[in-house]
Length: 326
Image 1 (cartoon, rainbow, N blue to C red):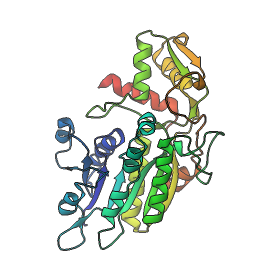
Image 2: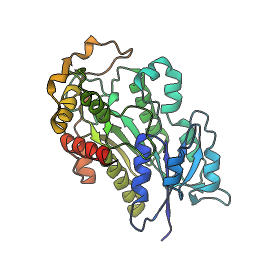
Image 3: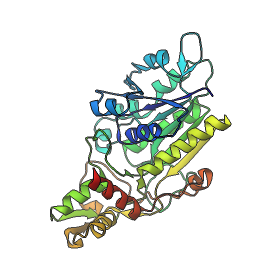
Image 4: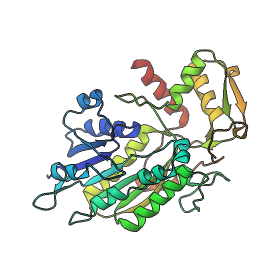
């Protein structure tokens, strides 16, 4: 059987690293996996996946993508190689940073250079799995469905809507995943941003009182569920060879506020819930508008891929157990 090749764009990020680890653990794997990075390649990551090729790529300019063509993928012409699957995890995903530099948000989050590169191959049949966000929704009701209108309230959400539209108009084989907050164990090479469960745990473990919003709701998704979804889409494309045009809400089964997230950590760890102060999101100026309720209906992804998402409390327990054994 011809080995299939998967390119993880943004492989040094949180989800990207979990994907690399999961693909490396597939028994008798039929995959060759490569990944891109933006600034520097962490040694821990290089050592953990010595068989995976790593490419320095600037998505804003497209610099570095030609190197992938020359070294990785399925033979498409006499001189170029084409990946079978591209998973795009790269993004400028901090809403405040997007608000400060809308041009950068658009140039990074809309994968124009990536699709231009894929379009250079003779056969435009690579499966593109693209990570979007629940922040494409306005946040004025609960349990949004994929067919609901997208009315983002900030630059980050706008850039992600633009990305979805660009992909839909310019590529014929894709799966767009509107992800909620992704949580779970730390990565092999720790990411610089604070992870939600670990941050809550560190604050409460010190006995410090902290404020948490009680009126903003999401459906946080356990990272290994996101990995499972991506692996299932990859397997479907490679085994069936049928192009797809999927738009999927990717969240957990539970609608929770930040305060409820903190209370779950407190209950599992045995911390006093008196440390958790409930405040309204409107009482804090974060320098960017944030949607109030972007919980999502995940029926489509559950039925399409026949998955069983991890309940939030169980995901938190698994996350804290992993931190304890690290």
